[in-house]
Length: 177
Image 1 (cartoon, rainbow, N blue to C red):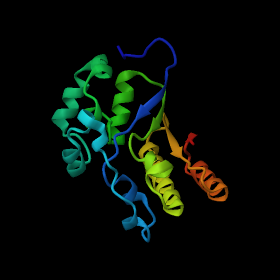
Image 2: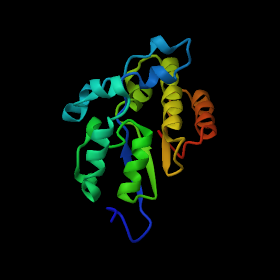
Image 3: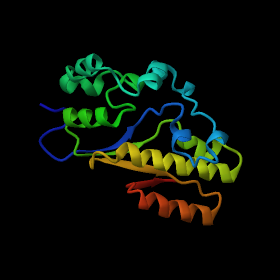
C-alpha cells in the first residue's frame, strides 16, 4: 500500500536537488558562461553524492531497486541526492507512484536563490530566473502530476512581467516571488 492512500493527496512542498550545471544547461547560450554553477555546498549532508549524481544523471538500476524496495518507507528513506527522484524526473515519477501522491508542487533547493539575491547584476538575475524556469519545465514535462514552480524576481517590473508570461507559457503551475 502507498504511503498516501484512501483519498486525493497533493504534496505542496517537494524539492529537487539541482546538479551544479542546472542553470547553465538551460541558459541562453550567449549568457551561459556568466552564470555561476549552483552551489550545493549549503546542503550539508543532503549534498552527499552530488559528484556521482553529476556524473551519471541518475541512480543506477540496483540503487533504484533498493529504494523502491523500501515500499511506503520511502518517505522516511534517504534524503538529498540519495533520494529516489532527487534529480532525475523519471525516478521522481516512480517515487510518486510508490508514495501515492496525486500531484506535487516541485521547487528547487538551491538555484532560486540565484534569481532572488545571490547575483548582484539584475539583468543576469533575470537570466538565472529564465534558466531556472526552463529547467523546471523540462524536469516536470514528462509527468502531469509534477507541477513546476517558477522563480520570479521582482527587481524590474517590466522584466518580471515578461518572465511571468514566459513561465506560464512553459506550463509551470506556480510562481515563487
